[in-house]
Amino acid sequence: QVTLKESGPVLVKPTETLTLTCTVSGFSLSNARMGVSWIRQPPGKALEWLAHIFSNDEKSYSTSLKSRLTISKDTSKSQVVLTMTNMDPVDTATYYCALGTMIEFDYWGQGTLVTVSS
Amino acid sequence: QSVLTQPPSASGTPGQRVTISCSGSSSNIGSNYVYWYQQLPGTAPKLLIYRNNQRPSGVPDRFSGSKSGTSASLAISGLRSEDEADYYCAAWDDSLSLVFGGGTKLTVL
Image (cartoon, rainbow over all chains, first blue to last red; front, side):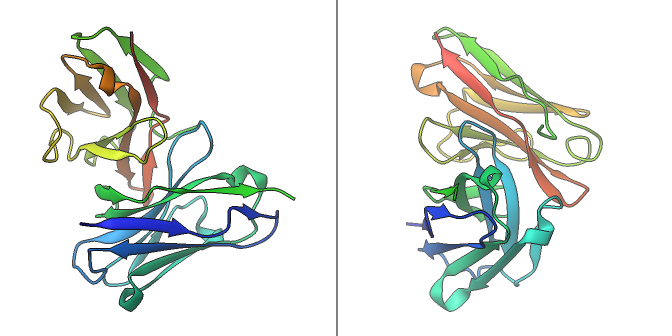
């Protein structure tokens, strides 16, 4: 059974850096063709793709947020980490990690709500 | 403002057929596959349609997808109360980003 679980702070202050971890169970991050994306959803709003990391460690970022994002993975720990710098209240959202081919996501985490407030 | 345009809402009565549209451009829908996700209230999205019109195993054949030019549609036939959810279209954009629609809230009357 494949499961994903996001973890990280529930509250961050403006200008701080957010670090989120996605722990994957039941699937190897070295599996070819598959990777992990981070996708966020502000309260009551639409989904927004942030970044993807492939099994070969290649990375892809949202063009609009690229300067603020870094995605990395530790295959031995089955974890994918996303950092987002210079957080702002508009970044308040539920952050999901999802496993798939960067558009076809078969498995999603439950999401973690991150609030940006002083 | 989302790159892909969806109607904010749609509705139907049980048993009816409803369609949800998704409009894009030549750089996304016009040149790449379209995907649809269903998001039930309070849950993570679930893949509903992939590569324009393919259904993952377990998705009822009441759900179907189509694409023409720079637009795509999701059709739900035999509408059921459990279909009440938000629906999102998605496509790769040649600007090197995955883009989503703004979402359509489906209400079963």
